[in-house]
Image (cartoon, rainbow, N blue to C red):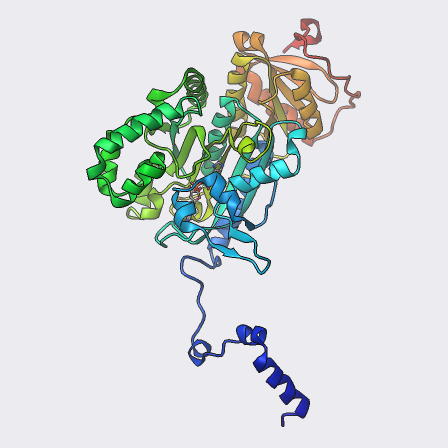
Length: 489
Ligand code: HAM
């Protein structure tokens, strides 16, 4: 029996537009089963283990490479993305989930995170912290793309952003980190790489490109004809077969680089060579976002594996990750001039690749080592050493963006590592490394070829009974190392 006050409540509800909006009154809607929206997915079953595996390795990688976690909101002002990603890009022109809130704010579900991280860097005054500020994130992103293999409307990214480091070594480290991270979950990849120059040299390139495409206007698609007038670099993003053909003969950005950009790019390649990073120059790679300067790159599954893995599933041919430098972005958003760079991995694409690869994950070793360097040659050698130690499963940290030994030893102290390895010019010439015991402050020279076994011995000793140690002496200022303090092993 329906009581009077219930009946009154029902009557009231029927007249209340909010209650009506909340109730699915259409019987057809009531009868059918709900599904996820097009281009969106539930993650469950076996995939959950792959997600956890990637998350675990990402966390470890972030820690080893000195990144702090940052989570930003899923909604931002639409203008943030329009301004940074740029009009004329597919993301801004076609793919944003945008709407107006009840309060009249124009907002968008985030299609990517670099703009938001830079917004956060400025908003929280992070330029006052020691630079570079290294941030990492993991979360959902939204693009109203045409759903197809490897392209979702809700997808997830894992990203690393570095703010305040102009060195090409930072670019190299990001690529090394990406290759290692994917390697740690069983995926072999290549880095596709280009430099698109800076505000000095880019205008020349844009002129050359515009000229070229004007000459070939009749052979490009209708969309590219529009892009040509608005944002010619975006013509290079087009995947139409006819446009791809014209692109193959287009002028290349590397030929128009100014001296500073050329030097940056050459040094980056040297660092990559030093670590045998598998890279391929991709002269027309420009990436579909406007904020990039100099280095742009994408990480792809190595071709034979991609083909063998899934009968050439299209998703395996798509980039697992993409990134680059954005040296003007902080200033563009109202901050101080601050160089920046980053990378984001598409998690669903990585998971797809893990499914196609046999993966084994080494357990992290407990004790840690810090690699410090003094001088350019030493930095290169230290970079190599850093990789060698990680390969051997020795958890190792660095602060390559710092030049002075004192500053680096301070970082090592803060990380509480038991040993710091110091590489100076002399060590490079002598093929040696200095091991500094961070508790006792004693430093010893070790020949490069004996370093790993010596470290392994010391680290395993630390796991057993420790010798009595004296407190560490204060860190010396940046002076040449005193040979008197050093006992040759
Ligand atoms: P992006 O290339 O647009 O770059 O996206 C990075 C990665 O996210 C892609 O390589 C891909 O794996 C994944 N991804 C993108 N769109 C989709 C989609 N519709 N469905 C599935 N996966 C997708 C950026 O987002 C830049 N913020 C990267 C960056 C960080 N640059 C500097 N820092």
